[in-house]
Amino acid sequence: MDCITFLLQDHEKIEEIFSELARLGEHAIRSKRVLADQLIERISLHIAVEERVLYPAIRNEVQASRTLLDEYADDHHLISSILARLAETPPSASEFARDSHELRDRVRGHAQHEVRELFPLLQHSFNAGSLIALGKELERYKRYLQDEHSHEGPRAFLDEAIIS
Image (cartoon, rainbow, N blue to C red; front, side):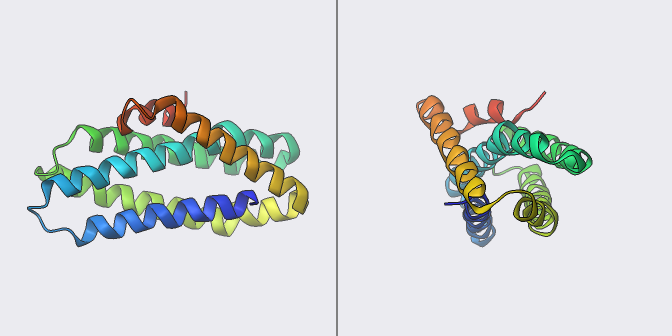
């Protein structure tokens, strides 16, 4: 699978979890925690593979990409801080709803920017074989992180999303 398809599938899975969370009533505390933890894991992994695999590959090939990728890194930093708050907030607290809505809006905005700006840049700058190779590398790194942290629980993935 090429890297664009990989990222789009990730976006879809994350959006599905946001939709499930939005459908829950205020008393579905355990279900909210489970879904929030799924978001923390998936989004953290998504950030990590972009920051550690995708963005370096783009920087190596496309000099004009620096400003765009710096903006995306800023988005990731903000999203990671919301994830950290969400990890610590009980689902029964009013802050949980606020943070989950803010997270949803930030993630959706970031994904829309990728579709409008990053994906065309990738299609223009890399041939089909390179996009597939990059997709395989993203998948490989994501599996590595999942294997590395699977026994620790979803919040362990937050450390992978926090980029210094």
